[in-house]
Image (cartoon, rainbow, N blue to C red; front, side):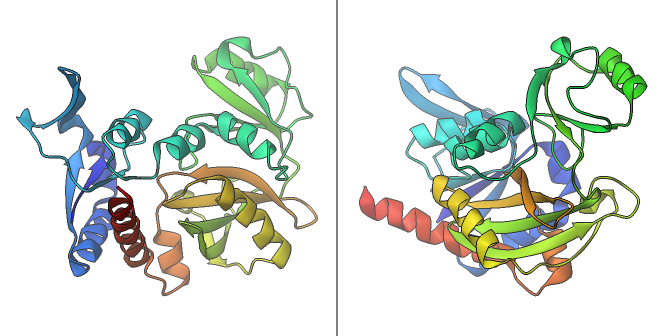
Amino acid sequence: MIGWLIYQQKDAGQNESYINWFLHEAQQQQVDLKLVYREELSIGIIDQSPVVYLNHQKQTLPHFVVNRSIEPIVQHFFTQCNIPVFNTADTAKIVNNKARTHLELSKLHIPMLPTLFIHGRALPEKAPFHYPVIVKAVAGRSGTEVFFLEDKQAWQTFKEQCTNQEYIVQPTKVQLGKDVRIFIIGTEIVAAVLRHNETDFRANFKLGGKAIPYQLSVEEEKMILKIINHFEFGLVGIDFLIDDHGNLLFNEIEDVVGSRILSETSDINLLEKYVTYIKETVKKQENEM
């Protein structure tokens, strides 16, 4: 079984240990997984047929693709070629846009903060909620392009300097610097961790956050299963904020989720489980064709 692990080159450099671990776990399960840089990959249609080039050399299609380039067109292309893609094109299209994700989960009545979708060119003169407010670029990830605006002056400064893109705006009625991440493979809740950061309003591990295991309640599990059953996940992280009463409020779904905090807080081999899931999914699809 041959698979491609697709990364942007700059992201691959920052995730070298994760990639090597992924390749090793694949090898352990007799899967030939190859790292492919998105910049070296050309995909398209010629004479009404799909074509794939790598470094200008025409390629035979792999048995599956793991796309971590955060470029949904890659998923859409290989899906149209009947190649299993992780995560799926439909999932990637939704979860890599924070506004679209909130809109989708509102269908399920998942608890979340009041959330407004506003383009940078259309920000009002004052924040739509009481200060402080949080502003997030809809395509931001790993805690980047997230802004904590304490007062009207900060709002005005952001309004003048913000880029020409879409944002979500939310109040800060939560425990700042703290969240819960749930790791999902397929329809399985693998584990949950509580992330906390004493020096930043964001709990991200890369921004200095720490983590401990988190025990989900029965009601919390029911809520998460409702999300799982609505999507077709491969491997994702679902993040929840925590309100002042300890209740979970949906925050975002990470399409390209890491595993460092899970490795720090448990002995779970996330990528071993993921490779097993991929093999089973690919074989099942082949049997159905």
